[in-house]
Image 1: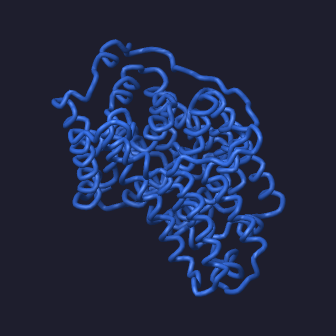
Image 2 (image 1 turned 135 degrees about the horizontal axis):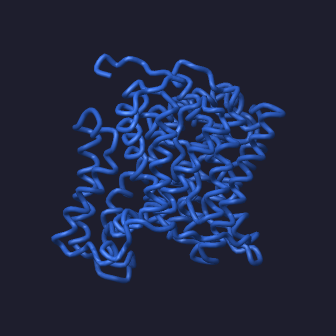
Length: 438
């Protein structure tokens, strides 16, 4: 490893090397994967467990050829939280199951007809704007977690919470920017640890649930209820994650020197099965993780063997060691708020970079209209907590902005190659650039 020898996907490593390398992948995805259930009211232990079993199912679907880890998707945070508040967690889980089936349907369509139609419906300009909405739409939540007790703006600002959130944010930035090697690959996890330690003497950590939790136990499963309103809110978000999935696969191609594009339908199908299964038991929606792609780029170890081990560890730790789940749940809200300030901003910045790198000509009104409408509707509604009621159904900001963006993209006249004519040609390259930076 010191000479950076490339370990290809089908190679097998000795157990004493494979275990620590797989644990590195586990830690790289850990912080972001457990953050999603903490923000949405789902069980973090089950979220970790389903990420593990989902990764194993994915590897089976791609015939053990594509090295990838499936973690919790941030794109679903707003719709899950909204549905959970309005109709309860089981209804949100039903929406996730439906989202998993959307993945699988799209995988079948790509298998039959190719992927050009995705490029037309979801060009980089639209996807970039939606990604910005996802990040900035969550910004109000991150701020509330960082400064208001109980995440309630009616409460006065607590400077103790602000301090903890600030230290957590600063630690994560420091590990990402000023450290090298392994520490630089897990800045989220290390930032959470620093914030957690700082919170202990301030009395922000409740150890009672940790002490009461058993070392060995069964997962706290929650089962879905299928509600059409919830499905219509959550399932369409899968289209955005499909775009992200394609970009990640292109980056893996570039890193490994192999072409896995012919396996795109199987890859999406595996992601869909993982998401649907997760929704059935109370876990989080799945997506391929840029964090783990980054680990591969640094270590030059691409063996799928490591992802089998990492998935198995996540499954066992999250599902059958309640003590670990209790520790995760004891993380103070301002610690997660500080981390969220960084992560949500990075999501928005990734969307902005995609818009810049797409070569869009914003001197044309078509492009300005598309981006402006999507950004203002999505961010305005999500940060304000608004939704559009249609009978018993309510459309949240991100979903409405995405639908309007798709319609505008299809009906507005093509005025420049920046968006309409080159969207299909540049789509994969733009996504690859973004995923490699993420």
